[in-house]
Length: 411
Image (cartoon, rainbow, N blue to C red; front, side, top):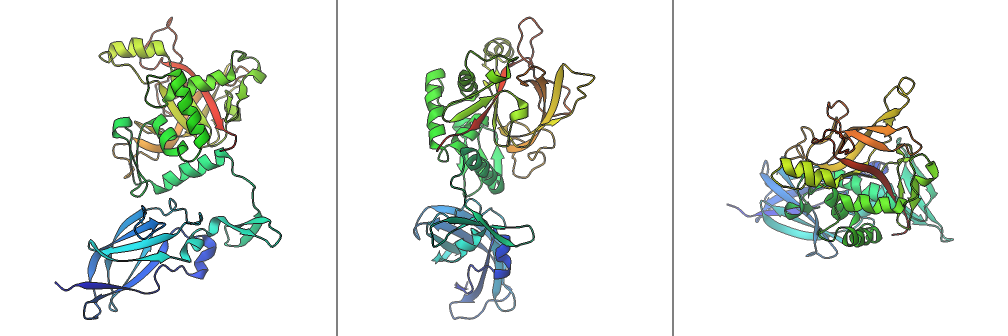
């Protein structure tokens, strides 16, 4: 079998006409020749693209395989990022990046990426004027480039929104699992974890170090037998921030904050990116659940992220004692919600993992406007309600409470 040479030309180019759309793919073109220099026409194979950070032998931050077939001139064209998202490669951070190519498993060479990262980062380009002021170039839907004064800082909430969207864009495989089987592989786009592990270990860690350290401090204080923060740590900590003055009938007591977290109860106050924690009652976990599951203690609760504004869906004129809201929820869960991204998705191994969909919440008419019941899907016949030992206890009467928290402060 003849050895094949991969001759690169016009490698890693982006047409100027495409710049305004801030592309998330890189056009890659090359020609195949044998060792005698003869062009190989109609030649098929598999090319592997590896982007490495800082040095030619550095850590891979992106890997993609694509099938290619040369044309009559021995040329093939691909778009890097066509199968796996390039959003996880931060081309705007000033780092050096190198690209290695392999053909049918044989390494063909490595070269540094030069001008391309700037084009890829065009949607978030920041420039400094002669007087030292910063300006951000942005692109309108029509492709016009406009300039604005750059924001002096990005809030923790904005950072979290961007991180979660990056994961969604990069997602190739996901599954709901616990600590021992968790997987985070940014290069291959694999994210397997449970609800609290996903938020804490895959999103907050490395992004918001002060918030991450704070959550670990709280779990050591509140639930030291755990090996990491779980749902009850989130809830019990946030509830302690509200304090003993909390009164569902007094709106001013239904919100409080420290240097890192703003905690509140009202569904009317939620914003995209807020955490929502549903805490399960300990008596339900160690009682009914354990008795009906061979002594196994039930989950401590569920950690979710608000992914869209709440939409009120009930008639409060005829039902003034409560409100019903549908809300888009992003989480790592064992099953999807209504109209969920995990349903029939090739990225979800069994309908579980990371994604988003609609839930329904019944909300108190008190000043707190606090959710006290929910349906996993708006059209479900089953409702998760507050635990009350005076009532019939079953799989759904599990809740201790629901609370919201927002990332604030400096990080």
